Image (cartoon, rainbow, N blue to C red; front, side):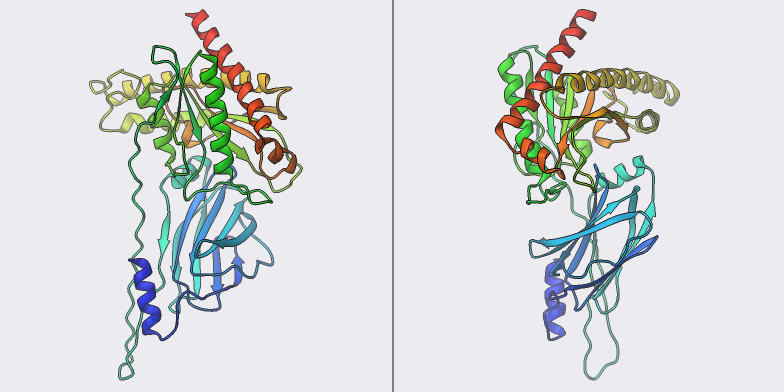
Length: 400
């Protein structure tokens, strides 16, 4: 519909409306202004985490001029051709979200209002998906001085997820769910030679799956096995519905300097735990929040305490596995100094399932990319996960 409106607008104005080249990007402390040399068809924005970025897709536009300087939360700007248009990516020095976007009357200037936020608010905004912006739909008769405009942003509706296949013996062995990060409309970070994080994460995840299944110790499922987009909450909800005993989200880190190298392992921070416990306790339907414990009959205070206690135990287990994986990866793949980090990452917020985000290396580092994109490199990553998983479940079984 939006493309049809843009097409019709261009027809009525007597010229195509999707031929605008970016002639200026003005990055200010609280807004971004993108100017084109002609009217463009449509724009949309979405947020990407790890590292934090704002991405703008411009339908019918072409890459052009880069900004002279950046201010406020924006650290750097990148742009490239993307499909039938252009994509502009704003690398953030601190979390910021787009609160509003609007085109000028001529459809050749797009203004985006920014607001700096904390990590938790950024993660929630990233999970909400795209914001779409249409230039005014306008036409004018020769005998009339009136100009009419219509603007109708239509956010996409995410498709419901389906439960994936479980690999391994069909018995009571623990289930590990591997989550290849990004996918579909979200390619993640992109290497200097054009490799997408989403593609590397999927290939690494499949290597981990094969290594774990071959060990015979666990069963394994992947949240996605092809190039599709899943919202963050659906990723860990898939694992929870399958009854997973461990959740591993696989990513490739990125940095502004190509010298950054090595793997890191993230777990949920304390601040995120408190906020998520409060949010879960406030839900109307509290049934089955905690792995089979029905909280419907409990008041809000009791529910909040139970969720908080469960999530803190889960966070402790997640942290132990993160340290274990960091140790077992030593000698197999490059690992950063002090590799265990904590952050408010939405994909790690399942209250009752140990969860980590595994940044397997830097897609911005040529040496790391060579490792991540090789069969041998992915095999070594998989071996490090397999060793950690074996020790993790053996230890838990012995403690019981």
